[in-house]
Image (cartoon, rainbow, N blue to C red; front, side):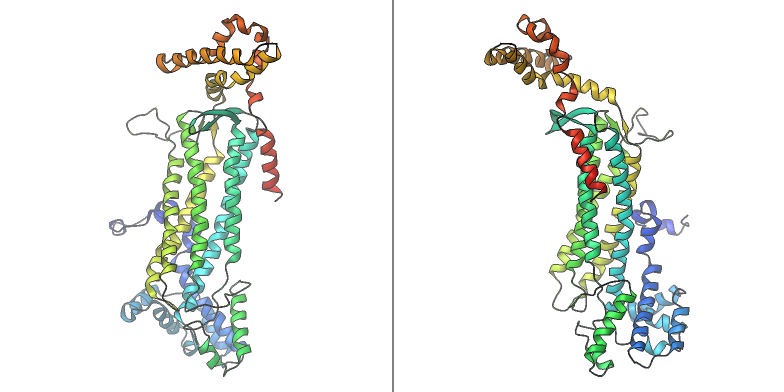
Length: 464
């Protein structure tokens, strides 16, 4: 619980209100600066293994202080030096006096800064992917349960041919499956910046190893593997290409678009009272209107998804203005845009999991809506039935056109129910097919291959 003084300061709601502990930790100062220390240890170990005069005692000393960071001292050092990396080099050296001469040996600030960012991006994807998989699992269960339940389809948010509740959920599922693919690709495409030096030429390390190119190549490889990466970028400036950030955040923005569409659909269906998100026993829907059950979780997802979609503009602009080997105008922007993208995606997926685990369907409401619209949709079937019974297609079409307009007037002008079926039953012209009307108006005959399409998507989900 924040203290009184903390309550006087702005706190990002992404951390204070929404995001999970694991994602918050992934972008925390604790993880960031302990990762810096681990990277310095990796560098020292590799340099020692390749022949530089670094001792086991120095490495052991560094390892024993990898976690115990004096953040107050680091802050004071940064205040004086105006350089965050050197502030932490000095802070680390203070508790590692024996190792002090070899900490950060040959490296530039981006050795710890960029490599740590890449680790955070990789670990961020690893946090998001299981959450996305759980959403897909819950939604697949929902789609399977309602695969055969007919419901009005909508185009332009106007009643169209029938679909099924489960088939509609398959539209959502297919988008999320694409997002799994996109996130996995973004994660797997990540490489390590590695050990590249001040402008990416590795000149400082070539000097340390007295011109031995093979050792410099091996140093880069060893540190990359210690950090858990299979490959490093072949060339960098001082930084890794900021197009990498575009790749990562564009995949998250695409996920945001998927979630916004899904939750907008749920909000529309909630208005129709066909489907609702979970609603707790003591939850308040409105401070003024006690009867309301607002779709607040879906609204939250839409709200945050818009922020997630907007954030991809940051790396697009940042990558476009990186001068030559690097410029520092990327730093402040990336401190915000990278963590916020992952934190936002994190809470969106957690909220969407909650929604998909408790979606409530109201079949009777759905059935009533179908009954209201189906007579209009069934007119083509009725015409075909009349033709099969010996009638004239054009004559039947005109009869139904007139009756349909009369029924539509009752609905639109009088606020009554659709009485087209009753008008057809009263008209002697349709006597030859009255016995077929129930079959002609069976909703299950209007859903096409919707149930079968669910089966195919199920196979795609679980056997891809």
